[in-house]
Length: 322
Image (cartoon, rainbow, N blue to C red; front, side, top):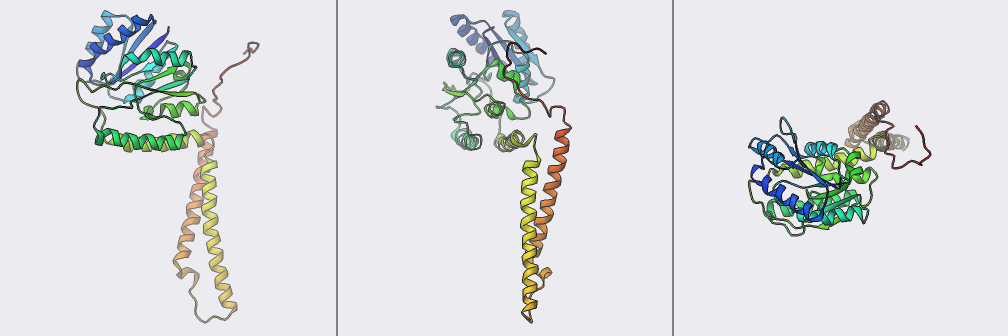
């Protein structure tokens, strides 16, 4: 199969008929073999009934329905588990992503050998204050931290090699950072394509301001887990040691200062315990010990984890036998 299109959706009943017809038109024009996997993320309108109706008209349309709303990441992850196509395309169900972009995205994966191609909505029709400006800041921050040169990490329109989606795991609200997850899984050839963005035709956006706060926290989480998930002592142990040594050094300096004052017969000087610096030093040593213990416990957990020795193998020689 050439292409699997994964469409996560929540309460998008009005747009599904037009979206699937548009996808079908593009696929037939280019002669692709395909499937459309629609993942209903706990919709409360008639989205599921519409999916079943569309399925009866086209057997290439497949539906998965969640019992409740789990979020876009969960919908994508389940969709990825079921795809069969060599190239996987994801797009939102609100008609703001254009299926006309599919052929070029497919070509970039197949002919230019990209692992992942992310859409870039260079011209947007969203609210500048509510979406455009915060999105630019979000993308700038993610670029600086991940060192991936993409302008629009959160664009729903993306293309992947099948190997990529079968390797990575998307959970929580990590759908914003799929390129980052893919890169840290070893898929380094990540490209970008300017895509056409359309005004929302039906319904309202399902995302609020909290997505920016959650997005920042998710970025911190995924950065830490990716770098130190299998070696937590390298982070906690390092900074715990630094903090302890700073506190210990200050304490030694205060004690040495007191001894020097005594040897010089200075009649008045502040006792070590009377100085605020002593308590800051004590706090630094305690904090350092706590960090070190956190790293030690994290190391024990990591070493006993079921996937502690789980590594992604890209290829084996043809003479390899199990």
